[in-house]
Length: 258
Length: 167
View (cartoon, helix red, strand yellow):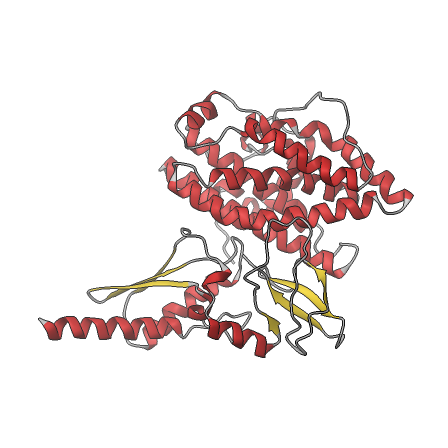
């Protein structure tokens, strides 16, 4: 394995799997940054466990992307040898951990979506994607419950935790629109029954959010301007720093194995 | 002809038994057959093909389990054992054997509850303490020492314990 960037032939199916794989890997990596730093031991373990689930999902999806592409790429090359502009994840998942409230709100926004998304994807006509969905939906249900409990505890906690939770919601809200966006390639996959239309999930996603956020005495922003770009490889400055750490071993010692 | 079939069936059973003897590295009282992780064993000439299903997507025990299966088969005299992972149908705790459940309880881990719903946003599940059997228990953390377990505490005997989560 060399340390140069690989080329990926992004057919609509390859790109579709790659986007979801990148979401899972980048969010999993972000959560793993808490390992050894979380406020309490139980939370340290919880965040590492969730990170592990997400990285496991990423591996399945990368494996499938590589297989669908049919060249000599594999899960490791896809994860370690693509540069920032080749990554296709949501801007939401690359946002820095910030304080604990930021981490939890980011997780809550994503898990509330992922839970609905994977459940719906179980009916995909693509057998591999349907199988990955059946595995992932069980995991995302636990992730959502964990994040929801934290949102309530933080929002309905002290003045300080409430203030921080509300600040995190206000800051991260603009990155949620991208979860529901679809481009032409994906529209064709939706039409073929391989992918699902995320737009149909938005109503239920908002209901999950309001239920939890109301109980947490917090509020959702009225502002509906949304930032996009991650799906097309236009990222915030944070992703490059994240990748430099995630990829440093393969870039420094090409082909390194443990 | 009959003898050939019988010999094959016996050979397959031997391969199954060898694979089924492998234990979960994190919970060594459970074999992969107890867990429902072992799905199929197929003989093809002198090749053995074993299908296993992962518990959780990121479960780090799966690599070791695959290696242990290959070793167990080689020790039982099978050459070229091959382990492959099947995703579908997705593994569920419903596949855990009754025997496996009692072994877990005896080991101090509360077995998965058939009635527990992952969908209930806020758990109203009752998990009996594996030490004293009391129903007065509380959840400490949804995520425990491994992907498949949560951390609970018994309010009667005050012992903390692991709960094998429903999946």
